[in-house]
Amino acid sequence: MRLDKLLSNMGVGSRKDVKGLIKKKFVTVNNTVIKDSSLYVDPEKDVVKVNNEPVEFQQYVYIMLNKPSEYISATVDNREKTVIDLLPVNYNKFNPFPIGRLDKDTEGLLLLTNDGDLAHQLVSPKKDVGKTYYAKVNGYVTDDDIETFKKGITLDDGYQSKPADLVIMDSASISEVKITITEGKFHQVKRMFEAVGKKVVYLKRLSMGELQLDSNLALGESRELTKDELDYCLSLKK
Image (tube, rainbow, N blue to C red; front, side, top):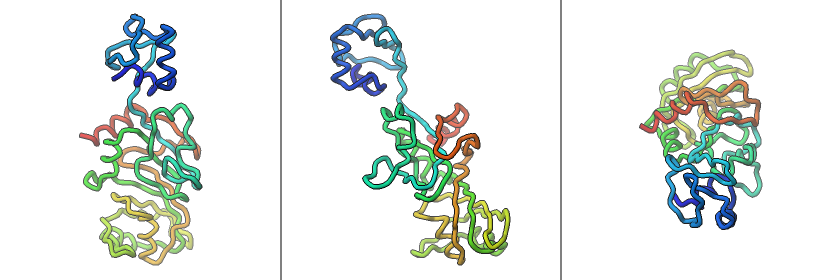
């Protein structure tokens, strides 16, 4: 990787800023003062310093966010607030994007990364990664609904969904349930309940596969994945 690209990617400054630092002899590679900003460096082996401070190279970032409602799962929007607006500004240099989507009014677990391969694997139907939601549903959810969801439901556009696991936590005029699906069709959970004559009034994603929403994260808060969480996610790329 070019030295100026590495330093700009790590937030040291723009390419122009980096060239200025090099011109002032503030940049060293393996303790040698560098004069050429286009020098190729190996981030895994070479020691790069600016003003004698080591620059730690990080190619990818993996972030868990407890998404609140009223934010859309996008990177940029001219009218709506996006999930990127919730992240600390130091992540901007990585250009993270959300993996999959949560509806504007849906809360809970959302992953953001700049690792396109991982993003593809987590949302790929071939991987059958279960996504579990907690939902409040207007209407009594019954054992018959459990069996219907288990067989797969025909949505309003004629699409036959894959089987879903429905667990009733409380059946009442406003029922509380958990539902696990392996797909991510537009408004899928809401449309599945509409197909059985009920309406979702609150929805929160709790998990993706083995990855659980951190209960210590308040709405709008985020953190990087732990080593174990990251190892699980990266195992899906194999």
